[in-house]
Every structure is written in C-alpha cells, then in structure tokens.
Image (cartoon, rainbow, N blue to C red):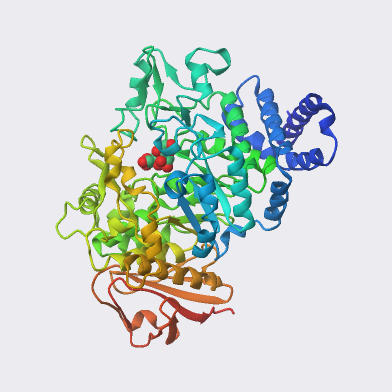
Length: 639
Ligand code: GLC
Ligand code: GLC
C-alpha cells in the first residue's frame, strides 16, 4: 500500500513526464523552471481537489495531465509585466487588506460608452480614490438579451460595441499604472446559447455532447425540479428550458444561459483555459460568478454542494501555478452559513458580504440595529488572508438572505419580516421613504427581491429630508467595518432609478435595469455645486475616504462589537497600527442617546474623524438623526 505522499509523487511524475514529452524543448529555460517550482508546490492541492470530483475515473491521471498542460499554456502566454506583478503580490500577499483599498463597479457602455471612454475616466477614479475597478462583463454576448453580459458567447472576444481585446489589455495596464486593480468576472457556471461549445453540443459533436446538461424528455428535469429553488421564476418555471428539437436543457438563470456540466472533466479543463486567458488580459481579481450552482446532484437543491467547493479550490490551485498574483472574489448570495464556506486562502480570498448589505437596509427600515449588530459580532470574523467586500447595493437585486435562526433570537419571524421588508422597499408600507421595484415576485412561494439605486431606496427620489444622511450612513459602515468597500458608480452622486428600461423589450422583463442607469453627467457636474444632494453625498463620501486612508485602524477586517445601550445605535470598534476607533451609527430620524455607563472603559475626550468635532463621553453621548461617528480613541491599549 502506497502512502499518500508516495501517491502524490507518482502522480506528479506521471504528469511531468507527460507534459515535458508533449512540449519538448519548451521544457527548458527560466519560464519552465519557475512553472515547475510552483507545480511541485501546488500539485498536492490540485490533485486532492480534482480527485475529490474525478478521482474514481479510470483516466484520472490523464485528466490531471491535461489540466497541468493547460496551466503551462497559460503561464507561457502570461505577459512579463503580469509575471512581475505576480512576484510583487507573492512578496506582499496581504496587499488587499490595506485601509487604502476602495472599489468601484460599473458597466462599460452605461458608464463610459466603450473601453476607450472608460480610459478617459481614470482621472476621476483617482479623484474618488479607487484602487479596484470591477467592469461588468465586457465579453462577446448575444445582441438582444445577454443578462447584462452574463451570457458569454466567447471569453476570448470583446463585445465589438465596447472595443477590442487590445483596448481591454491597454485599459488594464493603464489602470495598474495608476494603482487601480482591474476586476473581471469569471462566468463559469454557464455560457450563452450562442457560444461555440453550445452550438457544437446541440449539433451532437462528440467532443461537446457532454458540455451541458441536455435531457431527451422531462423525466429527469421533473425529478430535479422537485428539490430546486427557482432563481428567475419570471423567466421560466423550474430550472430547465426546452430546445427547438424538443429536448430539455439545464438553465438555472435565463433560458439563453446554459449551465455547464462539470461532471465532465473536459469542461473543467476548458474553463481553466478561459480563466487563465482572462487573467492574462490583466485582471487582478476574478469575480467568481454564481459559485453556488456549479454542481448538480439529484435529490438536493443543487446549491453549495461539496464538489462545487472542490472545483473552485482546483481553479484556485491552477492559478497558484500559472497566475499566482490572481485573487478570487466569491459571489454566493445564499444562507450566511454557506457564504463563509467559500472564503479561504485556498478557495476565494474575497467575498461579497450580502448579509451586511441586506441588514443595512433592514436597519434603515426598522430603525433597529439588532440583526446588524448580531451579524457584525457573530458572522463578520473571517480566516486570516481573506476579506469581505462590503457594499451597499450591487447591479443585482437585494435579497433578504439573513438566517431565520438568527432572526428568531431577536424575536423576528423570518418569513413575515421579509414580507414587511418587501412592502417597505416598494413603498407599499405607510410612511416608507423608499422607491424600490419588486424583482422576481413569486406568489407561489411568497419570495420577492428588491431593485433600486441606493439614492432611490434611501429616500432621495421621494424628497425625504434625511435621504443624504442615510446614503452617507450606509456607505460609512461599508467603509469602516473591515474589508474592501465597493461603490456602485453613480451612487456617489445620488443617481436615481431610471424606469427607461421598460421601453426596451430586451430589458423590460428584468427590473434590475431600473438601478443600472447611464452615467449622469449633470450629477457629476453638481458634485462641485454646494448644497446640491450630489455635492453633499460626494463630499461626505470623500471626507470619509480620506479619513479612512489616514487611519491604520481601518486596515484588515477584525472588529469588536460595542453595545451602545440604544436599540437604534450600531456600535463597533476597529483597532490596528496603534490606533483605535469607535464607530457609532444612528439608524433613526430622531436624536438618540447612549448612556454614560457604556463608555466607562473609554477615554472621555475623543474626536470624530468625520466631522472633526470634539466629543466627550463621560456623561454619555447623543447622536443627531442618522449621525455616523468615527470616534478617535487614540492609541490602542498595547501601543
Ligand atoms: C450573477 C450575476 C447576475 C446574473 C447571474 C447569472 O449572479 O450577478 O447579474 O444574472 O449571475 O449569470
Ligand atoms: C440569486 C443568485 C445569485 C444571483 C441573483 C441574481 O440570488 O443566488 O447568484 O446573483 O440571483 O438575481
């Protein structure tokens, strides 16, 4: 019986021999040496993860050999400047934990027309303070409806309306020179029905027949549908779509987004090649789209299965070997117990923080911070070497993904409370300040999610006098809670909902377009006109961004809960680099007082980093409506 280590060595020997035979003279020289050193280091992880999914196959060693050959191809094509970046990142692996990190996200066409237009916005990105820019998928996609680019027809071509692959490369390099990391999606759960693989699969071509999940009749689709959650019920019932020839195909999202079949190792290998090609364009972070859905198993909900994790870790191992500077950001909009399972240095180093996002809006609606305080204290801590991406809203809808178990401890009934939140945010609740739009309203299950820009949901559209303060409050939490804050570009100048999507037949059925408006030049001009909402939001944000950059307490992700003694006031402390900051946030439109007793362990004299004013704590503290304080507590205990 061979030991585990002997088995690994045997497999490595096989794979290396296979590869060096195949690539001949390439297997000499510095590029190979660097590759081989990392192959030796990360092969055990790659083997372990792929064995977890494909290990029972008789041809498993060949599967491994093909993936390693794909990695070599990716490394060989990796440009010198990106290899240099790899080295810099490996020397400074915690670069993304800095208090200077700040993200922005936009659609290329809607924000700047095309990739060249976006290049012209770099001075603005610098003015705002961005160090991270996520471009919504710019790849070739179907002309009419492409789910905003999330149906990809080719990962090697750019949508011609946006520019060329060279434009994207040039943009990535220009951003990098200015200290801004490009973030691109890796859409690996599905391709567009127009992708060459999809066409070949339907045509029955041998090599592609098993790239997707195609069924001759409804027998298996019906069996699967019994335990699946419907993701886009407005688009089609269940998870399957009928093809023109009468067969059925797995489509978790829209009917034109065909789920890939990862039970076929050729799919993993092919997508690993596409992933490295995207990395080699100059993306520094890949947003791992729809991670929860990539593995299917009859009788389950086909979400968050162990094989999905193994496959992501296998992709990660491929990166460690062939694009080592690259990071993954997980997009798992699921139960919080499941969200954290994707976050690890060897899986996704970054993750959206959908719980914090949803609970920010929850607290604005209820004027109570109970669930948010609980989430920060119990669900915020992450493993070393990983970080949250904290956002106020994204290009997607807001779903109320808190855990019912958590809610019940705060005396809140999950189902009923979600009904309330949905009514509140679509302005069907008396006194609501929000102007949201329902998304995927599902009368059968009572499910519904919310669309809307930050400003429209916070009351600016309705003319509520507290709207600006609410917008600053939410962003102020995202900026101070630990992790990378991410701004949906346009929100920083108070962009409102745009109902114009209803006139476009390709968009009218998807209310998320209401919160994806074009860049509003007039609002950006107003950011310099004192007294306008755009100026008040923009200057308020800039002030917080500056203060954050200047205070090392905001680096990293560690946070300690602080009970304010007032149900409307959120509290936590951040500590680092010899500094301590107490964050207090009033989520109501009334003055709120915190009793003296809660501050007994704190210094009396403090200063608010945001407003600059001195605040004494000995006699307690009163916060103005929606006031946010970052109180400088001076040096930390040990400093
Ligand atoms: C992701 C995207 C979303 C898209 C879906 C299908 O969740 O954020 O916009 O609809 O994946 O690709
Ligand atoms: C669901 C999915 C998520 C996707 C979203 C789009 O919440 O879990 O991946 O982004 O739908 O609306």
